[in-house]
Amino acid sequence: MSNTLTEIETYGVERIPDADRTARPLDLFRVAFGGANTFATCVLGAFPILFGLSFWQGLAATVLGLVVGSMILAPLSLFGPLNGTNNAVSSSAHLGVHGRVVGSFLSLLTAIAFFSISVWSSGDALVGGAHRLVGLPDVDASYAVAYGIFAALVLVVCVYGFRFMLFVNKIAVAAASLLFVLGIFAFAGDFDPSYPGTLAAGDPLFWPSFIGAALIVLSNPVSFGAFLGDWSRYIPADTPRKKVMTAAFMSQIATILPFFFGLSTASIIASKAAQYVDPAAPNYVGGLLAISPAWYFVPVCLIALIGGMSTGSTSLYGTGLDFSSVFPRFSRVQATVFIGTLSIVFIFVGRFAANLTQSISTFATLIITCTAPWMVIMMLGYVTRRGWYDADALQVFNRRQRGGRYWFTHGWNWRGMSAWLASAALALSFVNLPGQFVGPLGELAGGVDISLPVGLAVAALLYLALLTAFPEPREVYGPRGPRLVRSADTPVPPIIDARPAATEPVAP
Image (cartoon, rainbow, N blue to C red; front, side, top):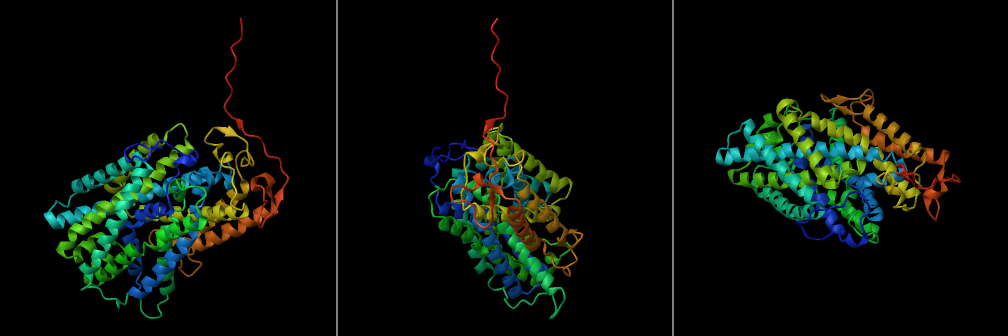
């Protein structure tokens, strides 16, 4: 593939040739950080204040969630350089040739959800800023134009592919960071780090609120788990793993900038314009514009534009790539245009016809609750396989073939699938989002949402137990054999073409 920005990327989920894998860990940092250095992250940063925490309590919850989430995410960056494909395809090794559709489905839903959140939040900020700055009418037509511009620009970037997206994110990382830092001067006079919150001392709601805020922050880095391979597959396979993981880890730690911006400004909004942080109907963007000095309206609009482009492109690029991996008859470009068009329709219907802007945030949280156990299975699979994979056998599904090391039982590895289904279902039952979604076991922890910890722990224990009790074939572990678990001398079927061979014409 050429390095020219204006040349459309043609690769789908097939293994990227070594000659074209010229990206660096720094590029992975730029794309992952750029995709999170946006208004959508600022909105998440405001949740500790919405939950009633003080500024310092909110900061502690934010740091805790960010560090733990980044640690969970970092290992997922290793599959791309190793196998030269995205993480959903790599999951064939642990869920089976057909079971890998689980990863594709999860990343598809996550991408559409976060693409929608990005377009809505950035569009609202752009229109609100323009309304205060130049008197742009604050009507549905203005929002529709803003959403349409965002969506169209993002679609163009994604069609051109990874190189162009990387170029956009190089600009976005520096520009958005500078504008957030500029916010320090905009709000320095109003910011009070001693903001006490609304929870009284010893309030029984403190720990549920603290843990809930930390889990919301944690969900942000976890949401990137299915996508890291989309970008890291362009990193050479011989790149030190520590550098790749460090890039992924630091890309999320760096989001303390937009998180801190959201937390700080939300504390100001709670003090000066409390109606905007009403938990029943929060409006962070409206509150931010209400407390901003007039000269900061232009930076707000720029953050909205840059952030919407960055987050939208990282989400939609992965969506198109995954769709083309599930339906190989679609090229990456065709899949991107198809899914992009459907996403744009969803954005407009969800905003203007069905009023789904709050529901989509709940939907995204539920998707991430299901994605976290999948990530654990991937990480433990990597450890038990000693990081060894058969890149050719991973492509069996995409080539419409059968057999190979990862065929297992009719293309399904019931060990990994069972561990994921059980842990995801149990995690969903522990979800506690008051007023939005409360699972049947959501009240067992005294109102604390422990869905993610439950999902992570159950997935780890159950998957290792199944690998131990029902050993996988020796062939899937490579020359050095398994780590922590046993293997079995189960024969592995050869890779064959699943499509019927053309019949020879019969001679007259």
